[in-house]
Length: 196
Image (tube, rainbow, N blue to C red; front, side, top):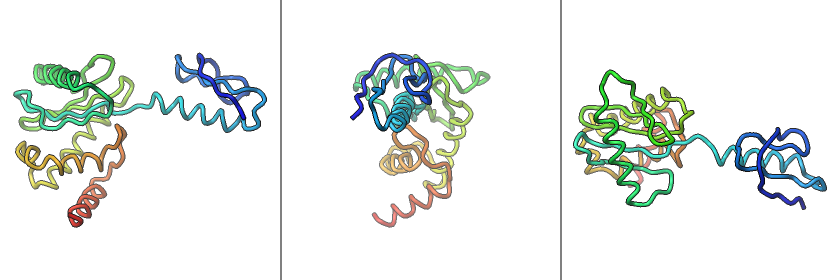
């Protein structure tokens, strides 16, 4: 059985004795007596990619006054840190001039936001993620909410928050975009409504 141990990264996973250069702080070394070196190298590369996968960190729906109407975190944060993040994101997006882009740097990540009526829809993503794709994700989410609630408003989000979370979970799961088809999400939500 091959022994795998964590060390520093350098090189490429294709050749024996070399290492995946994706992550500067992690390296898994395959021992030369392994019979399944190729499989272990593939597994190592997959794990390194998985550790640093691009993902949505959190989603916030906030009104102009700073009340958070929906918050979904895909990373573990303490309750106090969540409140701090919500305050900082609100302060960033509300005070921005409408002439500026809808992308703003936030700590070591990016916040992509869009305003619909009195609500700000904000996503926090990695610095290298595609901003325009996430702007379209926000718009698709609003279109689905509009279809589901027949012209959605802030009160729909407050009184039917459980349905909003269901829609969000059909759309985004574990910080990854799962479904981009509006029709597929609406059909799935219809099936869930029938089961209730």
